Length: 232
Figure 1 (cartoon, rainbow, N blue to C red):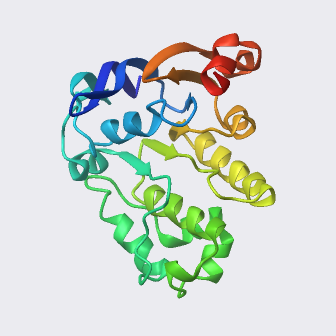
Figure 2 (cartoon, rainbow, N blue to C red):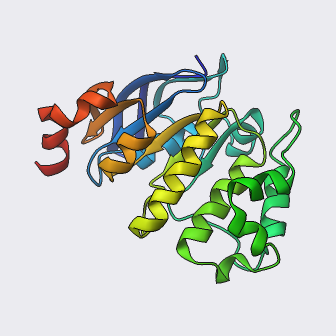
């Protein structure tokens, strides 16, 4: 077990965003966090990544308690977040962005940029181009590459499909599956159920910050709780 979350609680003042989230992620496995807008998905992964304080519960990564560690320490231990809107430095080139990502590999050998270009050939073609001038799909690839180059054990992907066209999504899905098959565990926040089904083996469904169902992704299409979580 690479990531074990038990009873996670996240609050903004008196407003509870996540209440009692529990799940486990095995090495090389992929799990999707599903739910409508405001269900608590992003708050969950940001707390796991150290960007938000956990108001309760435990987060264990590779056997270590990481709850409320600073994000800089979490990423150095091998857990990397790809945020929903990429959060790239627009005036960094592709090469500079990847070089910055290599610093996260404390105690591990970072990937070479060429290994990232093997996953994302278009980034190799654009290596001297500014991140802010890339297309949305290229920026998403660069954000994933920046996280991946530090050789994380777990990638947290927050809405990787956001704002992308169908053709780009197909290509991105294929690449993310290759990353998973290389042994990297994935925790994927998604509202696009088709992409979630393609990427994840299991899912956890949130509604109003609480888990309403979890199980095999193959069974999710027939679960009434999922329909309620999205359309209630």
